[in-house]
Figure: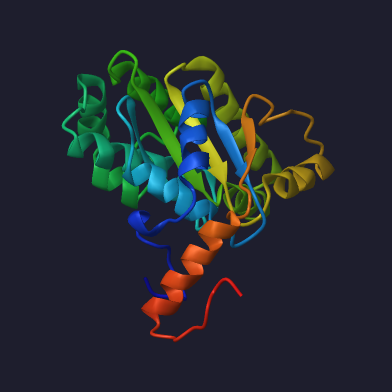
Length: 244
């Protein structure tokens, strides 16, 4: 294993997170989750490993929302990911097939919504309704949304505070409506910071009070030592007795 100056480790290289990942899958069987931690604690590595090693009964995909700056951008990105995952698994039902045919995927992704009179909220709700309906009985879709707080802040700053509020409220409504849809929020900044700025603009709702908060702890000493040894070995750096 070598030190990475950018990007994230291969899922098989993630050390010391098996227990917390097992807990996260257990929590996701019941509801959605907000993962919190200080910066550089490995939140992204954890959800990427989960996405790469999904247990039976779960389906979904990882999305980095850092570049999102408007609700329309967000809906396009979600649409793109859903199509990628379901097309790969050959699970597109007739509703989604018709939707892609009528809208035109390339047109939708590159130029915008083909029916501008329909709001992004309506498009999002229809998309999730069709997605929920085509999942197998007992199957759960998980949106692993990295940098969701940054996306909310970008939307607040570049679109409007009301648009950012609406995004959070629509996501909560989806979680309350569809029992087979889950969301995992995390990011380099805490969502509470983004929500605090919305509070300053008059936001009164509680958009994550239905989600389980999980704080990602530091690595156990033995796992931290194992990681350090592997990184030093990968960089060909000689060491003395690591226990001293």
